[in-house]
Length: 335
Image (cartoon, rainbow, N blue to C red):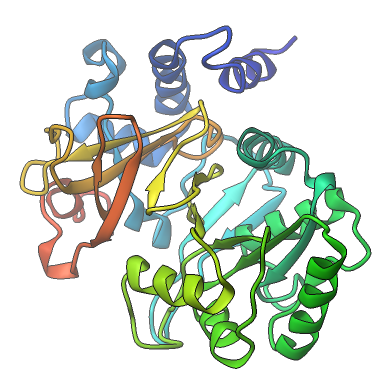
């Protein structure tokens, strides 16, 4: 077995055969050696492998660098490039994917952990169709989950709300297990135009107003959706273009990571320090599945950790509020 295959196997067996910290340090060494942008960032912080002995010592790369730099830990041609959705005039992030097989292993494994086999559901999607949004990692995931489900009524229903409402009614009447994945603005539109009781349907919102509607909080969104569809809880998916893993919430906006993913909350004024549980700060993400890019990312999200290991997202930094590494090293890294 090659070294890379061995480390991938170790990543997806974290918690069963391997300790998270041990594998995280191994991934850090791998990426420091192979990722020129990340190595430069670590060197500027004086956090080279010789200085990194614990997980808290690992530097977290500002996620904004995916907009201006090729963040890769591999040589040669990528298999695919995922790009973020953008508002007018903004620059998208680009995530260069060496292996779609690693991404598929990550999201399929996560789905099975949280929900069971995709084949147990009819999966409906309120997302842009695959041909309309070929660079979306979320759309790619939904397409593959629907293919794995194999249900003949599964598919993309954005801009086909009447058809979706009819299909939902028929599936509920038959007592079939249904999952509805959707971006926030589309779920709100469905709730406004076709409110109906959907007992047993798992509704998973994936975020995403992006200028389509006025921004509302996740709590407000879920209250509207619960009222329209007779749900006790609305589920959520937390992911981003720059990652290869997702966390899920089954209610109350509290997310759980798969074993190879972890969230740390940094001090907003001192990005190399961490906040205690219950205190809000910037969200740092370790995504070990992101082996061929960067597994250690400082996001622009604000959040907090709970004592049970779950985390919550409370908002985003305004551009003017971004402090520390994001600005300290922007010039040196050519951002």
